[in-house]
Length: 217
Image: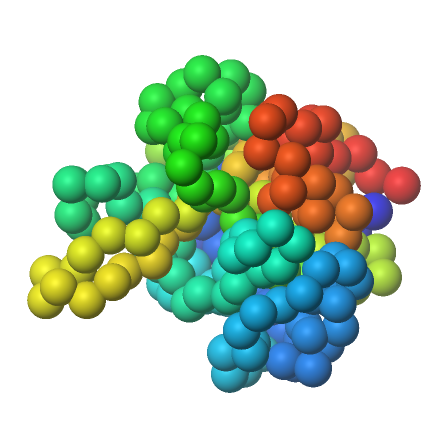
């Protein structure tokens, strides 16, 4: 399922999955959304192809709106917890292991009043060529499907009041242990096809096998 292309940007700092791409057009994204087999209540927001979407930037997410329908949001990639405002550290990734029992993720996934699961469209992601705890600056590699097609990241989203009282949507994506395609880094985002993405959104009563490691095909 995955292939590797070295990122042309040379070197970047940081670790974990803090950068992805969405190089396709809004029309191609609309086709991907239709593959989910559920109604999209709102029009897709205008988006332009982007070779790099980084943590703390805003991007489109999909979340459950009705019994069999989805809505879209432009959301901040850095989950803001209720009552905390913007904090000095990232919540851009959530580990899948123990996610139903680990704070703060369990607070959202066990909420019986509202479904806080979301999915994020993507066509590739960047990972550093180092272990998660290493400090040095290293080259990053870019990973995409072998057919360069679109896929989904599962995530958790929230909405909180901003400093001016306006509503702010934010999200985190779920990661898992890396598969054999990743060269060095030991974590990667969970990758979902349309069927797994639909299960993640609609089946809120279980963690779902979609959070297992992604293996290349």
